[in-house]
Length: 281
Image (cartoon, rainbow, N blue to C red; front, side):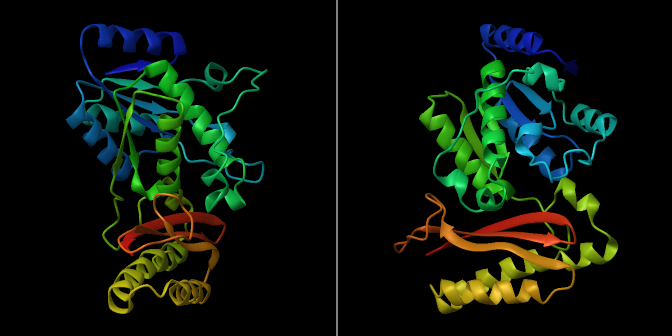
């Protein structure tokens, strides 16, 4: 496994592989890898001749009051996990490799980037799309694999690829959960034992909604209220949002047969967790 730290070198490596006729699968991460990340790596390996994983804690997707300075890091553990998955290259750029002191240009989704997470994190997706665009420009992967847990991010990246004419095919893999149902996340590390237990309300509410959707049909407003109440009654938990939206447009417009994304964002203590499920209207 090769570790590359410079933009020039990763571009040269990728071009060399493409000249040899090798396809490239890419998994962008911020590190502190867990089984959810590794499922994305395994998908990239199944699709591609060569696999690149990037590890870069992207400062532009954090607001000033968020956890950039405390984001968990385990670089040696990450490299060990990548070796075990037969990753070909791990790209670990320094901040100065990705952003100059005079950086002024950003990629912005004008519509759905302002919804859901974009309402409380208004600069977040601008940072996500900008760093992914830069990484795609450097690596030019055939495939890039993202996780369904970050559903809004995945939809925004798909739109960016379409709108900016990237050739990369975007693959979305299912949420990977702990045995008790909690969606795997690097931020789960922040939870105390009590908060970890109370955080199960997210997956429990999703399961409740799945069952109720089948039983009662399209009573979305009452389901939203019930889920908000259940979360609000759980110690340590505070709702950021509970939304049923059209999976394609993230709007509240549905017709029978549409896929409905139920997306949750919940503060458990000071840790903000997200989760989701997809239903059929």
